[in-house]
Image (cartoon, rainbow, N blue to C red; front, side, top):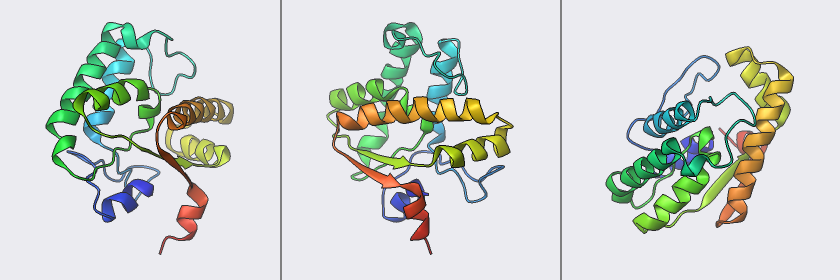
Length: 171
């Protein structure tokens, strides 16, 4: 919802923004190119988005991590830098935030975080409906992704947005 609001407010959301799918009829508003970069990195690290607590601590120094950082730098320089206002939404980004932060610094692009906090029960219900995921697994993923996002937000200019409050004010 927030990515759509930012897009309606004039932020460029990326080369190819993902549309509607099962469980999200209005669209995910995610940058499909960034999603692909993250999926390749996870695969190269021998894991997937829905495997909790398996990202190796040294992922950034491994070939897949270095490739992600290089691809992020290229994307930031060739695509994102062309837009005076841009936003990037892709949930796996919180896992790889350090690579993006470093790439943005090298590209000379300022970065801020808009972090949407959503109820773990809502996230678990969404993952159960879309992926058939068990509630305990979904809650563990929520915790891992949320802690990673909060750690990144603490080191950068940021604002926190409550998902339920955002939807309450939606027309």
